[in-house]
Image (cartoon, rainbow, N blue to C red):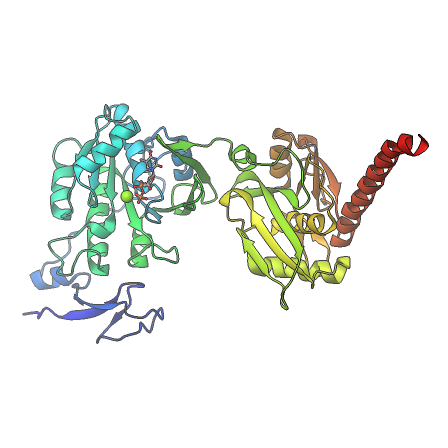
Length: 479
Ligand code: TYD
Ligand code: MG
């Protein structure tokens, strides 16, 4: 007779130890190990029954399988990230910080699918049905025939889903609140999350329902609970954004049925999440009409999507012994590198200045291609030269001071042209890719030539301003 043993499981990474420890040896986190009833190993049940396996027919590769049509929610930005809708029988995990809008997005998707006449079930373990209904009413979705439940016991949920027609679309909000009778640990523990996910995914595969599971994330942005859930599902999406801004990005970290470089862009409004088909317009929306020094427009690419954002720099004389370098929305290390290159290769003296860099709109830019735009904004702020209003910048800066080509040149130029930018300051392209698309390329080979170009524009602007004021003054002098 097998004795029920317990083991100690790290709630952060899922590592198992034989005794309690303050620190997890595997991931290094403190106070994450708790006692859980040990799960029986694979095949343990069969061994106990003493049953022999059952033979099944094998198939060959040439067999034809009829592809089932995807479940298209009608929320285009969500369908796009899923790879053109959700595959029947697939499981998708959606992670994101609390309050970012996961429940809002999914109730909107549910309502849209339900309106097309399919059976849709939304199971909330966090909110009561009254609360879910209240939100749906605020969003004007009360007429959609979504079936609601506030339940957390997985066995009951699976039994309910299995009764009647198989639902086409099932949302479980959130996996951390679900628990299974067969597992002794408390809800939210690694074994419960894993067990509940397993049961739900098994149901989805058997019934052909598209299953969407909400997962909480830890403070460093990972989906809480064992990484193993990420391996169990077919796709992992993360819903990102920052509380101070209304836009939200949906990214695919893993997708067995689509590309992982798609991003969906949404805006949180009073009436729920609105799709943003043209994100560049959103991010450039707040751009000053009266141009000021220190602002450049970066032609970026998020996933496979071009995205123009404004990069703002402020270079101000410091009153401190060690000047400040502060950056929002970009890598501090990248800023340090660009500054060092500007000092060594463009002759800029930045040691006596505080430097602030900000990506407007709250977007986080991770691309090295932003180097050139950041450098342009920094030089512009330092020299007081206003950058041309109709130009975008992109290019990676090497430690040698040269500007290196980046991917998706054509895509960037096309987006710039679409938004009315006539020029792009970019690395000299080996092949004139995409030039025909619109914005013309002014090749910039090095940071030194970028600095010279901006400084020359500054001098020109100063002389013409001086000439203008001289002209204005002349009559009084003469008279
Ligand atoms: P929610 O979907 O509950 O977030 P999550 O499930 O990821 O925790 O969204 C909560 C936030 O969204 C809340 O702070 C208010 C905001 N919100 C709006 O701004 N407009 C709306 O129409 C709705 C429903 C929510
Ligand atoms: Mg929620």
